Length: 394
Image (cartoon, rainbow, N blue to C red):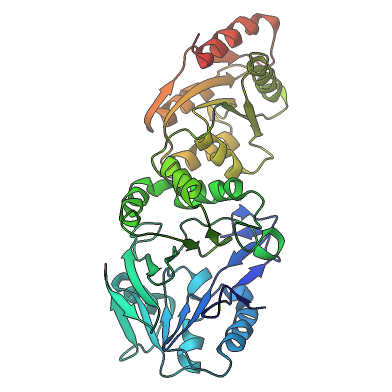
């Protein structure tokens, strides 16, 4: 179903509530939106398409919005298949339509669509180029590595709208969660899980982009996923600055554990309660059962993470190793970490955790590192208290 932002801007995007995961890895209990727009002016521009899973609905929306007209341009902001899957269909359906994208995107199109014919039907744009549509005009901002190298954004100059590609996106379908920021209940939670797990590695490029955007006045942000952001935009921009500069968002401590038989879990919960008794806000995750993407989000949200994990095959229990791999992949940095290991005969978890954290940028490992032998005992409490005090800075 289409939705008008105004007479010239029509939403033709789709929601998908059938897939349990986005990109085959991120749990999406509230679905996912694939946002696409039609600008109707003297020239008509389609802004992105959709994922193949919702192609039928998107095509219906497009044809309804066109109402018999033919599009002049198809703007590609990002070449990932969840936004570009309809290129071949569009070129076949509308022979006079011109594809507009960055030069790098043009190079990628034949990789996804072998044999596609773009001769005379494509226009590569660069930083600062302007595409005139009539009353509307699009100024292009290149946004390499936010989060692919071909990404660009469009700034519609008359209405001050930023088509922001994957930036400022979030998990969740619009029909369940709100079409715009007036309806949206809590943008930041799923937006941060989305940011840190998908864009988070590329904080430097995001910072570069934010500096570019400071040069224009933005009234609304239209991301490729999630609601339209409008009204007072400074909270969203401020969060993106915090996230992309790897600064701490919230006061508190994140405690994560990976336990085989439950003994390490008991230690982790005991340690969390020791912090809470001191008035500290604690977020907790069982890495063997909870969403790893949420664990990554919380590790970025707070300034200190405490990881409790079992030794396993002279190394580290795999759920903890997976968590550390995610953090390293996403350039986790500028944080403090406390370590609790458990081992029955040759504890090895702390050694591996130290190696992994030491390879990350500006990560401080707190002392003491606590070693539990099989199960927590009264004799282990002083070491846990000492680690708690180190976390508190006492």
